[in-house]
Image (tube, rainbow, N blue to C red; front, top):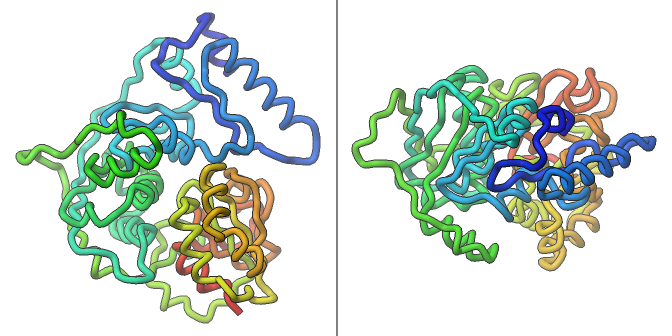
Length: 364
């Protein structure tokens, strides 16, 4: 916002710009609420939409309210490509790039090479979208997508919901890719209809004669539950290889795995059970809408009864703002990054896993 102000423009020149409050939420002093008021005032002054604290994580709220297949999105967060799950060309960029775009200047990017990720089959029980992107990371590493875009195609795509697709495009950022994208099909249309935005749907498929720079073939039915060990998202192994590891903490949520589907899954697995007495567990829902619907479905009651702490609908623990791992502790998280010290403690060891694996690790 300060960089936008420095340009001297009177109003943003984009079709839509949104300011989200989802990282710096609640800390020990007045600085966060002061920042929130500043952002709200600046949004009003320059013509941005303002998403107040509590509305949820920007990527989930944008998917619900504003993402449109076939359009472009520039965001000042590396996981902006989440919107690729709905068929939007979404790219994360630096704050100055975003400020200049709001001021009406063009955004330039070197044309990425295109990797076709051809999906066949369907996911087996207890295997989910998180395992798909973990397998991609296992194959190409955290640098394998640099200067490239991942385009997910093939008959297996239709078996994945928009929420599952968004999990995959979100964590594509961990490959270093410019963006990731799925087709916009009848699954997309149904999801937009549920959001009351069917009017925004357009069909969007790859050309039959499209030429790709690289190709990855992935049979969804061949996948098994995976986990990324500390301290890189590509340090991926089948979960059976780490079976028996003592777990101190489990964190559900973040922009990767905090959809309604994810919350209903963990609630179903924990219903009528109690978490292990030596494990601390928390959930950060993706948005206010997701939290409200999960409550209607009875999932929140089941999670609280099981001993899971309900945290804010925010980035929070993923970026080390609250709910850090204990000293020398093992934390299983459904987030997208497990870099050394990222989650608030340099001695904590973070494992990345699906909601299904995390829910299994929590049980006594």
